[in-house]
Image (cartoon, rainbow, N blue to C red; front, side, top):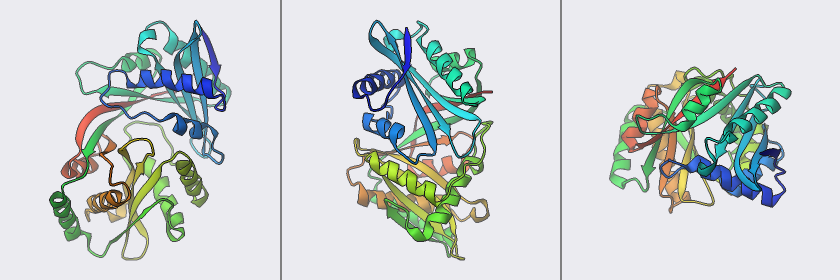
Length: 330
């Protein structure tokens, strides 16, 4: 077996890696979301990213049988590296995953990363996914569980209007502002602050994760990368009576499929109790319908202990698809 780092400009090597990893990541799951080849390429090559990403392939008898990706934050959480390992179903239980993990663990250690994060997708079943056994065997500890839910689109207009009325009854003098694409300049600094609060304000179980550092420059770099990937942001913010941002929600619209993906949703603690989470999501669904009328669903992930947000999503109509477990070593 040979393991080597992929040059993202080597189209043949990148394509073979993407095919192998996609097969591994999709196995045993229900309609799994998989990054497109173009999105992966941009992730690896886009300048100004706040992450260093590296991609590796495992080759046996001339065939790429699996791959691994390293993602390392470069502005914060400098001790961490997120790793993703995927092996073709036909090549499992032959040591490929272990070899890939050992290779990327050695690489991240050489760069001073002392803690590894990994994700295991878990079908809704009493049987643990193979990745659970793999993670535990290699010294990872379960730290958090998220649940993926899906909302079929379009949402019936009467239901959306009912939800909107419920939210408006509690919203008081808060107002909502929506946009598609780049954040308006007048909001970008406050918007960056909201994004910086997400990982420490939203429930993340026992994950060892510091607050992220976001500023206007990072917001603009993220927007540029998203545009290069063929994606578009649809965003709604809540503006408090004093003119400051109280919360936000954001949906990513890919260019290559009809599903859309819920990203951040956050209401700052001081502004909670006004049903702003529901108000934000309903307003953003209306904006999404204008921007992407052909969208067929919104996919979202929430920590299972995030009761308030789970309740909002279920009230809107999201339904459980699968689980996701977050594991950490070191």
